[in-house]
Length: 537
Image (tube, rainbow, N blue to C red; front, side, top):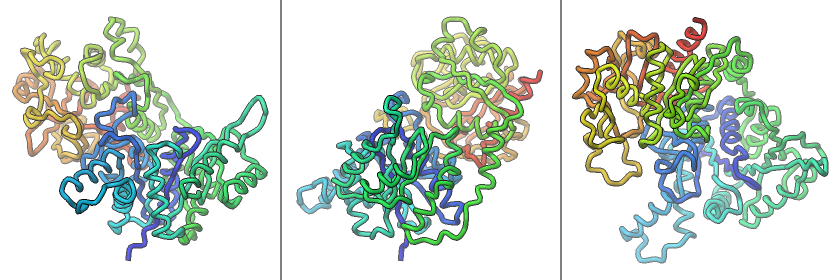
C-alpha cells in the first residue's frame, strides 16, 4: 500500500512571496528528519513548458537530467535537497490540457462531454500523484503557482479539494503563504489581506491547515491569535516568515518557527529525529563570513532581470563559500560593450563569464568580452552560447577568418565555425526540440576541465541547437585552442580550452544546473579558484 503524504503550498495576496523557497526549506527540514521528500511545481500558464518563454517574462528556464524545460523554482528544489528533479516535477496548464485533448482525440472518453470537472481535475490529480506512486517518496510537496483567486489557478485548487477529501486530512494538508503588510502611516501590521485571501481559498472549498505569514516585522501573539480566529486555524499553526538576509537562512528560520514539527503533527508522522543541518550551516557560516572578495563580470543579454541567470549566480555562491570568498557579480549588458568602451566596462575584473542565450542581439559585445579576457589573461568561462562566442572570437582574431560566425547569426557566413546540428535541420517546431538533458562527455586528462572534475567521464545537461563545427576542429587546434571534451557517441565538441592561457574554458553544456549547496559544481570551484589567484597578482 502506498503511504505517501502530500503537502500543498498555495499563495495569496501577491505573487513573489517565496512559495518556492518555503517549499524547498520545509523539504530540507523534513529530509534532515530522515524522510525522503520531493517537490513539484504546478504552473497555471498555458505554455507547454517554459522553454519558449522569454527570460524577461519568467526568468531562466531550468533543465533536468531527463530533458524537461522547467520553471526556475526546480533549481531551488535541487540546490536545497541535493537530489535531481525530473519531467514529473513541473506541470503546466498547457501540458494538462494537451494531455486531455490527446485522450479525447483517441476516443478515450467514449463520446462523453469533456469538462474541467472531472476530466481536467482528474488529469491534475494524476500528475500530482505520479511522484507519490513511484514508492520512492514519503512526502510530496506540491507548489501551486500564482495566487489564490487567479482564474487560471481554480482547477488546481479544486483538485486539491478533491484530493484532501479522497486521501483524508492526515494524508494531504495545505500550507497557505500570505502577506501581513506593515502600514507605516498607521504604524501597525494589517491582517485583513490575509483574511481575504483565506476567505477566497475557503470559498473554493479548501481550508488552510497552516498559515505562513510573510512580514517585514515581528508578528505578535495577539496578531497570531487574531489570524487563527478569523482563518479557522490554531494559533500554533500560524507561522511567521520574516524577510531573511539570504534564502539559505530560511530553513533555519522555519525550523525555529516549528514549521516542520507542525507539518509532521498534521500528517501524523513521527518527529523524534531533529534536523541537524550541520553541513548546511557550515556552508551558511562560510558564505556569511568570507575572508576575501573577488569581482566577476557576467556578460549577458538579459542582465536587467537577474533571475535570467539564477543558477549561475547561485553556483557562484556555492563555489565562493567553499573558497570562503565573496563573489561580487558585475552585471554587464553585452549590447553596451558594442559601443567600444570595453576597457572601461571590464577593467578591474578577476574573472569573466560569458552567459548562455539565443539570437544575434548583443553577440558582438560577447565576442569583444571574450577577446578582452583572452588577451589580458583574465580567467574566462563561456557557457553554451558563451563557448560558441569563444570559438568565433578565436577563429576571427587568431586564425584570421574574419567572416567566422555561427549560422544562427548569419546563415550565409563563409566560415560557419558554429553550425546547426544535423538533426535540427528539419525541425520547424521550436518548443521542446533542442538538444536537452544529460549527455555524456569524455575529457582529455591534460586539461583544466579534467583537473576540475578529476574524472574523464562526465555527464552534464544541455539546452541548445547549434554546435562547434568539427570541419574546423583541426584548423582551430593547430592555432592553439584545444577541444578537450568530446561526446563519445556523436563526436561533437563539448569543451574548448586555451592551454597557454591561465584559465580559459568554454563548455557547450550548462554546469550551473548541477551546482548545489552541498555539492558545488567542480567547474565553478576551479573558475573561482583561478579568479582568486588572478586577484592576487
